[in-house]
Every structure is written in C-alpha cells, then in structure tokens.
Amino acid sequence: MSSGPTLRIDLDSGVPAYRQIVDGLRILLVSGKLAPGSELPSVRRIAVDLGVHFNTVAEAYRTLAEEGWLELRHGRGATVVERDAPAANAEKVTEFRRRLRALVAEMQSQGASAAKLSVELRNAAIELDL
Amino acid sequence: MKLEILFTALPLALVAIIFQFLPLLTRRGIFFSATVDPEFPQSADGRRLLRSYRLQAALWTLIAIALGLVLAPQHPEYAALAPALLLVMGISVSYWLKFREVHERYGEHRPEIRRAELSPRTSGEAFSAWLWLPPFLALAAIGVYLQAHWNLLPERFPVHWGVDGQPNRWASRTWSGVYGPLLIGAGLNLFMLGVAWLVTRQSRKTAMQRIMVRLSELLLYPMTFASAAAAVLPLVSFPIWLIPVVMTVSIAAVIYWAYRQISVPTVDDATPEPQSDSYWKAGMFYYNPNDPAIFVSKRVGIGYTMNFANKISWVVLVGILLMALLPVLLIRK
Image (tube, rainbow over all chains, first blue to last red; front, side, top):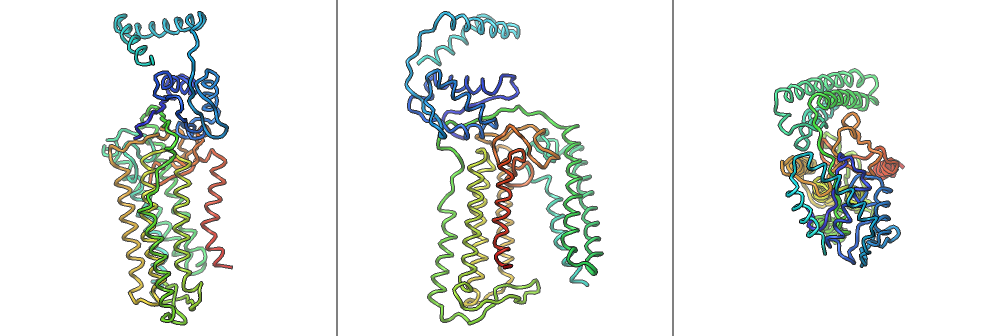
C-alpha cells in the first residue's frame, strides 16, 4: 500500500463520481495533504485507477483549476498551486448553511445527538483548517 | 495406433486436469468468477457445485478424446484441433452455467470502493534488474563461450528433437545456426517482459500486478535455460530430456508460487479492481464500458484479461497475437 495521499470514492453511494472526486481532492487540498507544488497524476492514470471515464476526472480537475487549486498541464496531470483564499460571500455561506442543515437532519434522524454533531463539526473544521 | 492414442489423449488429458482445478485458482471470496462469502466454497453447496462441474468437465474430456480417436485414422489434420476446441467450448459452457448459478443463488454484493494513489510516480509495479538482467547476461556469456570455442563446434548439429528423442532438424556451423537459439531466447525474454511492462502501464496497482511482474521475471529463467541448453548442446553432451524436465518443473514451481501469493487471505490492492459480477460476461469476459483500463486482473487463474468493452483492447490483442505468431511465420518462410 502507498503511504502517499489517496483518493477514495464509493460508486454505490449515490453521489456522482465527479462530485466525489472534486470533494475528495478538495479535502486533501484544504487540509494541506496536497501542498502547493505537489504534482497530481495524469487524468488517464486516475481514471484507470478509479475505473471511471476520462471525462469524469478531467471535469473534476477543471473544476478545481477554476477554483484556483490546480494548474493543468496538457496531457500530463496537474500541479497544486499557491492559492489566496477568497472571502466567503453571503451566498456561499447561505448555501453552506442549507447543506449543513440537511446533513444535520439526516444524522439526527439516525439518532446522532446535537452535542455529538457539534463535536464532529468542530473537529472537521479544525482538521481542515490550515 | 498406440502412439496415435497417446498423442491424441495426452494433451487433452493435461488440459482437462487444468480445467479440473481451475475454479480453485482464484482469490478468496470468488467462486466460479462470482463474488461469494469466502467460506462458501467449503460449504455443502459449494462442494456440490464443484463436484458437478468436475463431473461435466470429465465427461467433456472423454467425448473430446473419443472424437480425437475417431478422427485420427482418417483425418489426422483435425485430430488435435477439433477435440481441443470441443473440450474448451464444452467446459466453458459448464463453467458459465456454474457462474450463473453461484451468482444468482449465492452471490454477494461488495461495495464499489475505488481508490487512486495521488503520488505521480506510482504508475505500476517496478521491475527488478536483479531478477531480469541475469538471464540476458547468461545468454551473452554463452554467446562469448561459443565464439571462443567456434572451432570445436561440429559442421552440422541437431537443433530440434521429436517426442521419441530423435533429432529431426539440423543446423550448420554458421552465425545464425550457432547463435540462433540464443537470439530467439533473448527475443522471447524481451517479448515477455514487454507484455508484462505494457500490462503494468495499463492496469490498476493490485496484488496481481505485483505477482505478474515477478512471475514474468522468474519465468525468464526456465526459458533462458532452454535457449542456453540448446545453444551449448553441440559442445556439451547431456540428455536431451533434461531440457523439458527442468522447464516443466521450474515453470510449475513458479506458477505454484504465484497461486500461493494470490490466494492468501490478506491480499490487498492499492487500487482495487471493480467488484461487481455484472462486469463479467459468462464469468470469463470482462466488459465494462465505463472503465478505461485495458487490462484487468483475472478472476480465475493467474494473470490478466482484457476489458473487451475498450476498442484499444482489441487492437492490443491483435498486436500481441501478431507478435507471438511472427517467429512462426518467419520460420515457415
């Protein structure tokens, strides 16, 4: 097994593979596990490893490049670049709140307490905060 | 007539023995190419299915041998191929039916968890020069030895023997006659390493990839032994049967090692293969249009099969077949 960062997706989860790739890579980028200057494998390599279409991976790379995380290199892969974090605007915060409420409701319906969820949220924020 | 029976029945019997054990040459949790509970093959139902398949395989073998014996006197040109085809097709149908039964009645769903390593230099299992280089050096050393003893070589010497042990093809003391076996050996070695390299570039990083790289490196040794022995035979006297015996024993040992590696319970893959049985048509052919991989670990047996939904797979398949047939075509010319 490799000791380097690994991208993991679950094709049974119902979440599209493209979304899972973007989310998975973003977590690694935000947490610093993929630091500026790191080179990512080519679209082809990732697509073969994950068993998904090239376009799915290429689209995920493009999304992260548009967010300023990656610099794409034609036919090779991508490089993680230094990124100035933009100020979170009101629209983004509202969207976050909506998604968070949905997640909290889902977990509470499965028996998770408010206190437990608060701890989880706090831990996640600390873990990903650079 | 006795020789005809032997030549007809023996290869078919050998193939049949392999088919008898085929369902067991697999990873834990796979049975007749279907995903099952790892303990299922040892259960009463698992044993019943295996017995039933083996009985059917044995029947197909007897039918194929009978066909071979009927064809041998009148149509010897078909006596080898037709029974072999019948045997493979018959047993394949039996295998397919067992795959369907196991999948539908006892199959399990495994989560489709996929992983990708994000380190850019992890494209495949590395080859070890310590393993693959010595066979080439040995062939080169024998070439030097033959050059140094050129004058001791006979003008004409045997290079091929029949099953009765008698030589049936000869070569003369020329550059191609003397060094031919060494060059063919080096070519075959390169071909095998080339195929293994291609597979590592186009497949996922699994336990099978590691095993296949080592397997291809280790198999260079018996192949090199055969080429080297054939090359030095004009100078060094030894029983000719030694070559097939050493090759058979060493190849069997290497394959047994590979089987032990693949069947260990803890075997883990850095980037796992897709899990669903639905990708395996008839339990034998991998067909997944969403998967860009060309080579996929076999579910049964050791090595790789192709993703038949990928057009490039067909191109590669034809290319490999042409390369494999090239020496035969050249020799015939």
